[in-house]
Image (cartoon, rainbow, N blue to C red; front, side, top):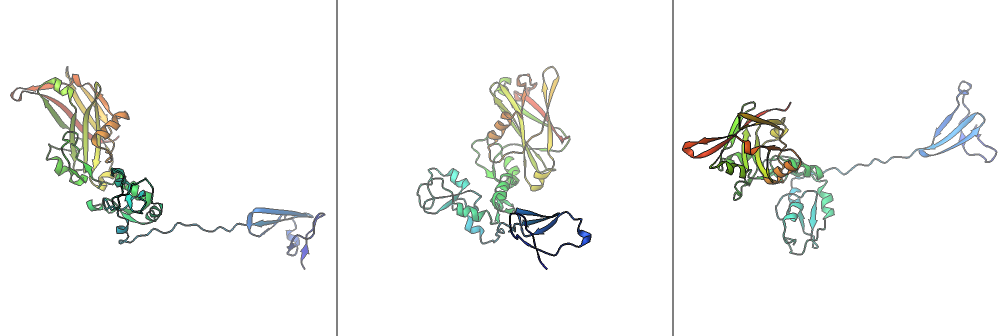
Length: 337
């Protein structure tokens, strides 16, 4: 037999199952679930309380699966650089697209396909499709086998060890037009000057020579080192800013393993007059390939990650048969403590 619950203000509001057995009469609440958490109605009937609850049905939401098809990569190539698009794609009024890298280089801003002006409009439809498509790294031609989509692929590009860079000695040899991957850099640098080979915990001496001491005080200095054990370049610079000379250093990996290996610190010792020495401990950051070497050094100075050296107290040695003054620096690499 069904039972109806009422109160003084309303008629039957629900049909309940038969009352609980005597053993369960001490229960204070009886709950019936009708499916929605937000709305809850309760009625008092004697010493029982009936609660009607509704639970929301949750529809699972999932992003569409990524697309991976070797033939798709050719459909996402920029018509200028022939590399796959990153997450930002620009479009002209006729529907022709270009990648962000090429768009920033185009002057004047005209579409390379139809020559109409580029206004900065984004191809949001193509961006949405590209963000769910697995595409190769832009540097696959240099050996990178990374594949990804959307922002993950764009972030990889910024740290890819196969990303081409300019010659490290470009600031000393501005006429040099070399541009290539770090793995080919060692062979190229040896065409300019000696790249010093280094080993951990072993000192490496560097000399600069000038006809006069004043000449040393007026010019910046650069030196490049290479560690075969870590497959890394270390670039050291003494750069002038105002009346001061700043000592700074960066490193550049040539392999994926080299990028993941522990960072080394440099100890640079400079002999001063009166048989004194000054020693600096540097923890070089990784070179930013998006900047020229001058830009990397400038950023280190601006961030306070360089050391001001007493260049006019730098001890020199006169070599009679060469008619030059020689200035020495000794560098050593150690594991970071």
